[in-house]
Length: 59
Image (cartoon, rainbow, N blue to C red; front, side, top):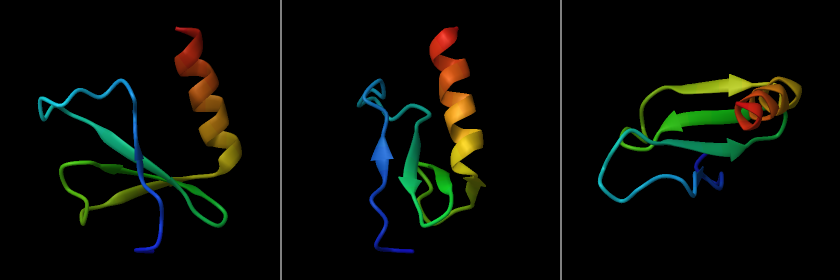
């Protein structure tokens, strides 16, 4: 999965704080810690990720 395009939030600052990166894989959306790129990843279905984004935007 090294060919994935990982994106960091535009709200992430450059001060080395807690940031996540997201990548669109074949049938899932992957999330990882930007400071531990070789560490564990969470996988979500596209529908679950959309629901999370809609919830986060509403608060």
